[in-house]
Image 1 (cartoon, rainbow, N blue to C red):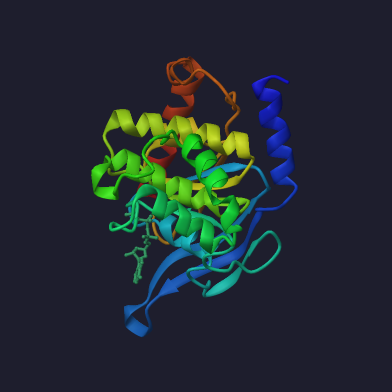
Image 2 (cartoon, protein in one colour):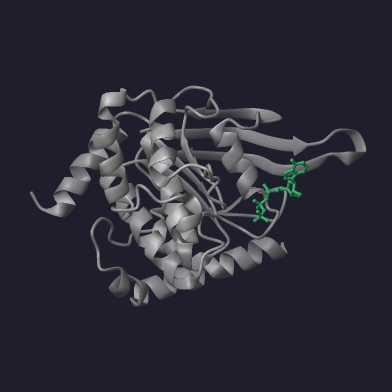
Amino acid sequence: MSSSETTTAAARTTAGQGGAVRIEDVVHRYGRGRETVTAVGPVDLTVPAGEFVVLVGASGCGKSTLLRLIAGFEQPTHGSVRVSGAAPHPGSSAGVVFQTPRLFPWRTVRGNIDLALRYAGVDRVRWPEHRERLLARVGLEGTEKRRTWEISGGQQQRVAIARALAAERPLLLLDEPFAALDALTRERLQEDVRLVAAQTGRTTVFVTHSAEEAVFLGSRIVVLTKGPGTVALDLPIDLPRGDVDAEELRTSREFAELRARVAHAVKSAAAD
Ligand SMILES: Nc1ncnc2c1ncn2[C@@H]1O[C@H](COP(=O)(O)OP(=O)(O)OP(=O)(O)O)[C@@H](O)[C@H]1O
């Protein structure tokens, strides 16, 4: 079987297990009375299982709020959010990766991954096999015994991604996970996340400011208006997925056209 066939088969298998997101008429407000801030809405958005959606928009337009609603960290003020057909439950409906890795600094790489496996309810005898697979998946072989301060920022973020994958939830949520990294590390991690999502078939929602990152990663891009965020543009991205030559993709004319289109939409949505 070719790698793209394997990818598609894996995608189908996991897609069948759920991870679909349904957001119906959602509005979210913070605070009360005169202090109220309407952060999001109204938003309607359906993300079918296996899709990679990137939410893009200017600072403060409500991207993180929307992600927090999907994760179940916040309850919508109005409307409903469903993950795999049920109300999302914080910590168990999705694997989540934040802008900063949020690792346990006194633990080793191995300790951080093992903790995630324990929370995921994986039988202890199977931890080594799971750990090895996860570390290989994010390119961290051989770092098991290192403390988190002994590895780079990019490697720390890889540990955070491995931890989010450990739970084997069909939904993966990432909130600007590469914003603090240098350009080269960022590109490498984008390539890894793109491949991991394709290979595992996980439904993915990724938040970013960057049109370039959005076009590279997404099978669909949703641009939000300035706050309160509503959907300004919902654009399918038909670039090849799976095991592709990233450099070729990034330098293609199609890629450049899509990046320009998304950048323009983000700018107009922020100005309206
Ligand atoms: N806990 C909170 N309490 C009050 N207001 C909040 C809270 N969290 C976010 N907000 C407000 O809600 C709006 C949307 O914030 P949110 O963080 O979702 O936007 P964002 O698009 O992710 O921004 P950024 O790209 O800068 O991270 C902003 O006006 C923000 O100030």
